[in-house]
Image 1 (cartoon, helix red, strand yellow):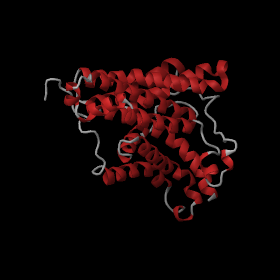
Image 2 (cartoon, rainbow, N blue to C red):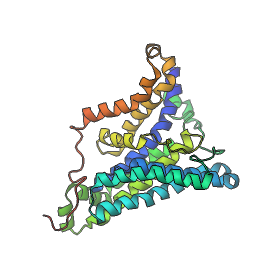
Image 3 (cartoon, rainbow, N blue to C red):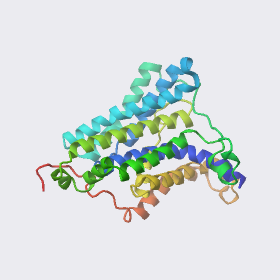
Image 4 (tube, rainbow, N blue to C red):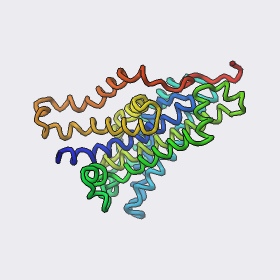
Length: 316
């Protein structure tokens, strides 16, 4: 039980960017646009979040990382605008557009690092997110040590965003319009809903949350920005979205599951029946679980019917 109490708070920290990025993908796919570019958006958000935080450390101290994640959010939004324009306005293939943005993000961030830091990585952070323990709540039996002791504060932000996403998508007029555009865009247009506008909004919200996730990841779990800071988390977030059946709380649960699988390698030496296995197995485990989850749940998880389809206003 002691080992679980040690592992779980770290797993929640790893799960945070996965959950937030998956929520971003939810907005995009619910509007009808597949956002393969989440990996690249996270990388761009991580770069700008890290850079702004580093530049403001001397002036703002511990507030610098919070300003940094806002910069990452804005950068992700602007970067996703390219995907929205190409996919919605130009009606290009969404998968190719997203793949191109993923490839561009690597070269772009390395180039900007070279200009700003004269290296292919940023300087090391002085200020970053630290773990906290919540007074009173940390003393609750079992739940206290798991969820309220030595936890990154950004995890509570992820929970808040999951609740807000659920309310917006399923309890508001805006959410109803967004979902209708991802299910029956032609029918939505006949009811006076501006399908292209809703899809733009869905992709931009996706970019905001993806950029936020990238900035949180690098400022919580890394000591500096590198081109390897994200290492596939954007793709795992997409699997998390499918695993969670395109629902906010499903994404939250799936994100914690994938986060736990990520930290298992750090504690495998302390688990008797896992000691004998090579460490490479555990490094590959999150990605193996991603594949297994897709194989098991891809058929039963039915996404928005028009997701990935090009909207043609003349088609009926």
